[in-house]
Image (tube, rainbow, N blue to C red; front, side, top):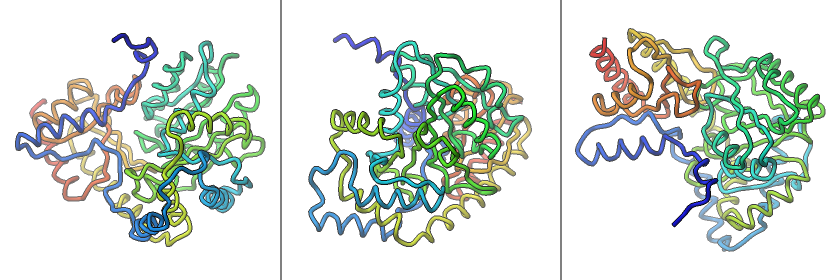
Length: 388
């Protein structure tokens, strides 16, 4: 069987590969501390689970509007008004099985061979993967430690050409935990309007923010009609396995996205959308509790990493990842990640899993218990000491 040439351009998520390696070790009796997978270790709130059961009882198990239940899209529109001051109707909102399809559909609908798209690097690997898949040119914008892993606006300007059709931003950011400042967002908006560029803003970690305020580029004057705002329920409500995401997008892109949905998944399970309505309208007390616990874990893992000779780590402002600098350890980040898994039983990700500018760093998820974090820190300290 001969595959299409475009499949060679399609990447993957290394996190799932490392998870499989870790599970293979566990099958042999090795105890592994998992810091590779980025998902909350909290249970989905019971009121949301109960709503899903209620939806099943009501028979919400059949096909529905490919764009999403109008009831859920209406609540998302209200959420946009409350949190961003954006006035949109449900007709601008598309619901998908997880937030990742928004990247898939939007990039497929917008880009073609000859186009260019700028994306953060290190960054979520699906951005680059999908840009390359379309045949467009993926143009990385480095996120550097000396800028707290924010992008350099002057460098962004230098990356823009007449062929630039899309800029991807993500704040709070995976894998670094970096957060774009209001000035950054405004400068990006000015460039997008000046050069007639669409912006895909990935805001799935908006509530997992430890200091400052979340700034959405879609709320700035003139940006709503050139912005695809990607969001979902996985991180905020610990609903990763439910697969429920959405986008607020310009009307002309909605129709194309809905056609891609019809051609791929038909629709998002309606009883899960019913649970999404409860997530938005029900009690919100689980969210700050989870974020406060993540902050506690963040401080423990950052302090612990900074005590290990050869490793330094910034204190991230958002998400639930740390991105420690391991350039002084004595091996490249992929070799170190492999060493920590095989020799110390700690599953981490090499920074290069998120792009070329991730070399010299590891990504560690602290969406696990304090007990596991402390155990991992001890094991990392011992394993690194043996290399010096």
